Length: 149
Length: 171
Image 1 (cartoon, each protein chain N blue to C red):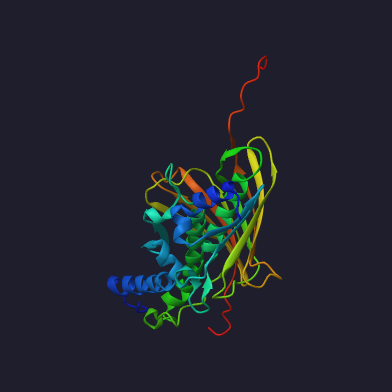
Image 2 (image 1 turned 90 degrees about the vertical axis):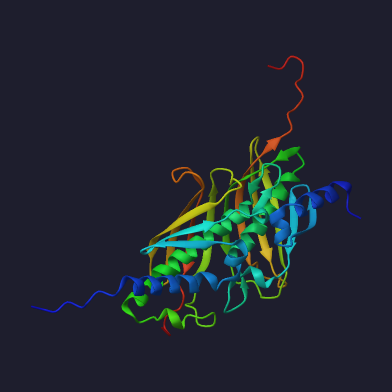
């Protein structure tokens, strides 16, 4: 059974209008690692001759997943926004397959989070795309201790 | 004195160019899904993303989803590049836009990589983008794209992408 925290995060992510429009589902979320997937949909096709999903839809999935990973980092993150995101497209996603992104927030400073992500279709041997990004990081204000400046 | 060819009637020129542009843009389902349209002045294109609730990424602000911004920039870049590729063929008469139905579209370039800089929050209103092909080789191309909302000089995002050119051996 998923934790209450994950359930809340799922509700939050699945309530984002654009994530809903793309049918995104939060598969797991824990300590700076997020897994979000998206169904194949003919409306998201970028190349009508092959039926391959548009890179932009994969970008949206990667961006959402990256943001979720940052939010789940165990240092009290209360807000984030993408600073930059680079996506490398390894191969076309197979038409008909669900696409699953896994993002990992692998380092945080006081105000910046660094994220890497991969996206797969049903074939797990080679990613469809990989991404790296920097995100802003807002933390809950720490209570002032006596004697501190 | 050499006899100069009579210029084409302006309406013929406009119809040809608009038909070709429409065929490329309307042939891609995802561009229709996001509601992106293109405005044309001569060969200059401006991508327009009319605001819609389904584009929201942060309902509290509200703000456009970063993924929408990335997709908008990538679409603007690909269409600009495709447009620059068919322009010569179209103007020389080798390509007849009337033959461009969904099954006979020019092959689109494939994205190798794409980088987006998010400069400002995407506000809940229309967005515009213009792309510039900085290098267009036989196999690879590099395209830069800028997007803004209210003020042309205050970009809310910019991007650079590298693209693999479509195979044109059969063309």
